[in-house]
Amino acid sequence: MKTVLVTGGIASGKSEVCRYLAGKGFPVYDSDSRTKALYDSVPGLKKRVEDAIGVPFSQIGIIFSDADKREALERVVYPEVLADFLKWKASCEGGIVFFESAVALDKAVFDGQWDEVWLVTAPLDDRLKRNPKVESRIQSQQEVDPSRADVVIVNDSSIEELHSKVDKLLNDMKTDLTKILSVSGKHGLYKFLALSRSNAAIAEALSDGHRTVFDPHSRITTLSDIAIYTDEGEFRLKEVFLAINKALEGKDAPTSKSPEAEIKALFDKAVPNYDPDRFYFSHMKKILDWYNELVQFASLDFVEEEEEKAEENA
Image 1 (cartoon, one colour):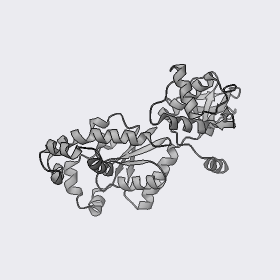
Image 2 (cartoon, one colour):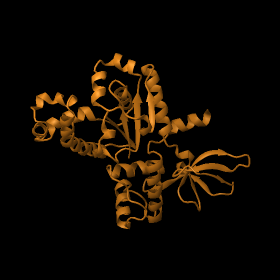
Image 3 (cartoon, rainbow, N blue to C red):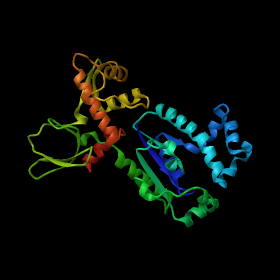
Image 4 (cartoon, helix red, strand yellow):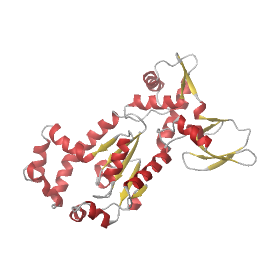
């Protein structure tokens, strides 16, 4: 499951981006509100924080002006936040989750959690107008270097314009299986780009973007045309991928080189009614290769049929 960190300074607009994402049905982990909830739900956490920072919990605001106390609190609290996030992520369905935090990118405890980083920025004058605490918070929160982000969203206009920028990002992230190709004799998946004048398919490898021209005689199959056999008929590959993702419960998928028993156990859980007379172990391994490549280099957030038809008619 892909994890995107949405970060940015106070009053940059990152919370509005996350509210919009949540409104569109995407799972969003609000680290601030979840952390506050942990103080009440994790036994002894408040006492551990008091011991770490040396003041009553009611004076926790001191961390914004005392770097040593802030770091002491983080050493206690952030491992709890990470554990809570991983448990929450395992309960989510779909191919992508978002984590909202102003500071997580700079905290070592979260290293390795992000597949992509979205940085929301705004001119300082705009931020000061939105929240008068900006000036003091900037001193306690290091601003994120844009070069560390995969995506920079500049929030310098209306909310509608901000939403439009998010919509474009979401659309770009979706995987259109009608354009994802499996080519006989070639390892890995390819993304279709165009047809040449000689009717050859121009495609790029998902893994590294290397472009290849496949002549008209190449045996090419789009993943949208593939289904597996079940007791109730054919089950489209897109649905198989989503079923695998759900069955994994946030864990990494096995690979095609994993033990046969492990692979079969996954498919028994994900697609328990598959037809063993027509869906073989070799098919399971191939699907796992494709699944892992999509997770690593694309997304399990798939273009829906209505969107595919709209693109075809455009």
